[in-house]
Image 1 (spheres, rainbow, N blue to C red):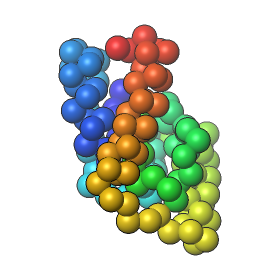
Image 2 (image 1 turned 90 degrees about the vertical axis):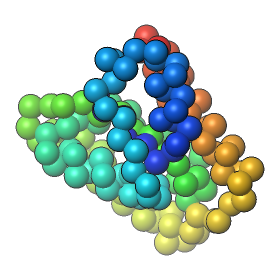
Image 3 (image 1 turned 60 degrees about the vertical axis):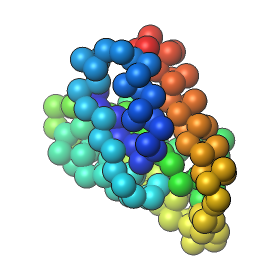
Image 4 (image 1 turned 30 degrees about the vertical axis):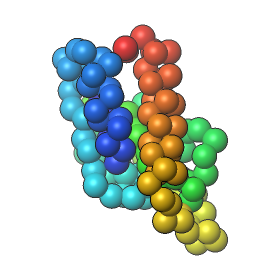
Length: 131
């Protein structure tokens, strides 16, 4: 499994909580915005990876938060379902961004969004008994 994220808190916390780096092949930290994470995942899907977590999970709108974390795994060729999912997510984010750009948040709000993203991911990992 690979974790694609632009959330620095996710990278720090998952390694600490898992305490088993062998469970995560790689945490790929991308220094970009929300859309950049989706584009990175799309590029990896084109090379044969499958999406494990929905790109638009959670109740925070994609034009509100700057952070996104997505789990993928190596597949056996192009997975059309994953490609359709990520392309649809990209289109949705583009629509949101067209109407309302993501604000430039202050540090406190930015930190809150990091925690929300992390919490959603940790809950998912607990559900699949990863942590």
